[in-house]
Length: 114
Length: 114
Length: 114
Image 1 (cartoon, rainbow over the protein chains, first blue to last red):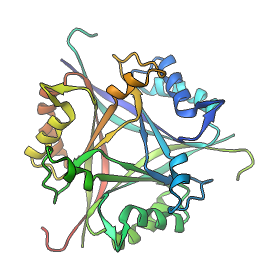
Image 2 (cartoon, one colour):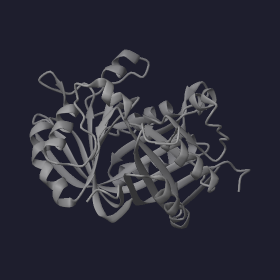
Image 3 (cartoon, one colour):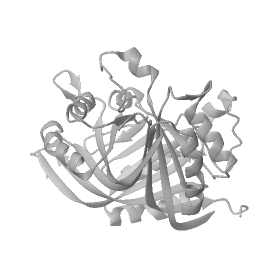
Image 4 (cartoon, rainbow over the protein chains, first blue to last red):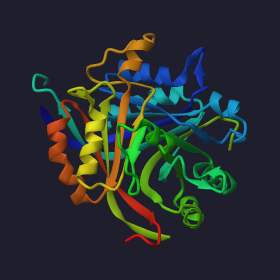
């Protein structure tokens, strides 16, 4: 096992589960773009509740909530790699929130990997 | 599409799914308060496992775990807006954890919005 | 209710749901180690999708995805406490990602607690 440390960036993309590009969920379009651009990994989390600037959620209305739950896509990579995806996100995301944070990363890889 | 950038704060509130104010789940009380105070959005995530200072979880005991899963409420906004909600959280949260982090925000909004 | 503030660290551990130590899921082994070491709490989140360096995910292939969903374990504690667990993580985690971030913490505890 190799342990590699360094300062990298955490990119978090907040969209709605119901957001689509054509018939495809927006979060899957973003995931495909991340893979295409050579990112090493990504994690997609789905919230159980939430609200956004356009959402008039009634918490009693379970159906409405369940149809557009919040999605958070998380990516950790170098500053350069993260910045390379931002123009793509500009094209893909109609409305939403993206955050950037510096994080100290410890990456474990198997011995036989470079 | 408009892209707005700036430095803002990420507020994360950790409570239990079983925490209640009267008959209402604590996380819903917090969500309502955030909407009332004019926050633009919030995301509620539910964990699949976890433990807190008062929890004596036996991982074998699935039922116990499923009855008080961890809840994380995330809010991103200006320092002033985040600080305006802290006194309310002091009143609402009996025990729990709140964290604050600076984040660089890219906010996408539709052209027709201000 | 007591409110305690201070600077602490957020440790986030990214593993796969299918990762095991013997027959036990890796995330449960990590959770047990955190409890054994006296951490006050931890939260385990499960993603709904994602990919890692070794994953050749076909998004069409739902079964493949569902068998190794991403897991994020989150822990907030003092720098010393967080650093005390890193050698254990070195032993336990074969490949994965760990991130560290400084966070400002507000901790609520009941009056009768120390």
